Image 1 (cartoon, protein in one colour):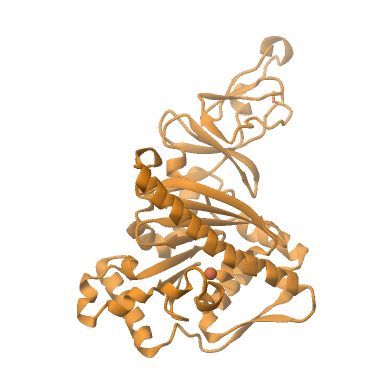
Image 2 (spheres, rainbow, N blue to C red):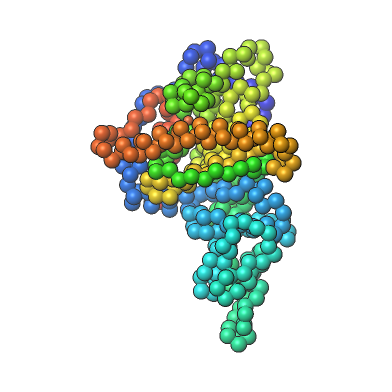
Length: 386
Ligand code: FES
Ligand SMILES: [Fe+2]
């Protein structure tokens, strides 16, 4: 996003403020209840979407140096992400090539090799099989080159490490990621996510379908009601500028500060000073962009009615360099984020609990919730491609 884009978006926010309105679709839409309760459909969504598209699983700052690694549970099982001697991050199935035990049980660490706990086959950070106990006697003729850890293409870009399980090679992974993010690349570059650092992570599972969680981030209709005791008073009611950017969504949510911006001062105003911006990066990533930091929210489908939410606060300074007062500031900020987002997720659980009652055959999206309809249409389009 360049300065003229930012100014144009600010003017769109000011127009809506004048009109006391929001981005409106031409008509209301409906979403069938089965879309959130059908376990067979859920499995299709995983294979058509989550095991197919690039997904960000780590921020680059979580693997700061060569030999740092992390293990992550993904939609293709446990994966080791490892930064090699050459600084390149690689991903491997966390599965031993001998008899299939999990090779690395630690969540994170720094190591030049990975040793399987069962019979100590040892692998390098580039996945190659380095040593096998009693190799000559017990595995004569073993071709170690053919028994490295099974690689999964991944790409480090825009501050994140994206797993691309459907790609056949690193080159194809780069092409897939570029094509998937094409319409948001300018915005991701503008955000400077690669310059941020992880402050803290918060993980919790909620009893609701992953799409319900995503829908909650695409409108501000609920702010004054659902968030009346937290952030609601700081935002304009039912006012947001929404754009679909390829497969993704940008929702600009102006705060009360927008009222201080005069038409003639737009050129000197930063969008992030007067609005929060939600980027819904399909399928399971949301960036909640605030003035000086970004909350990265992962919505990981576990089952048709359960979603794991990982909230990671990304801040401009490395945690180790924070003064005590800066640390307290970000800690407080994280608490506010969790408090506010929990209000959304509790409502997500209440929606899921009501779905089976039969009270609704469909959920209704008003003209002010048009992004929800477009988002769900995108999901349907992916299923149709299968
Ligand atoms: S299963 Fe890993 S060394 Fe045997
Ligand atoms: Fe909310």
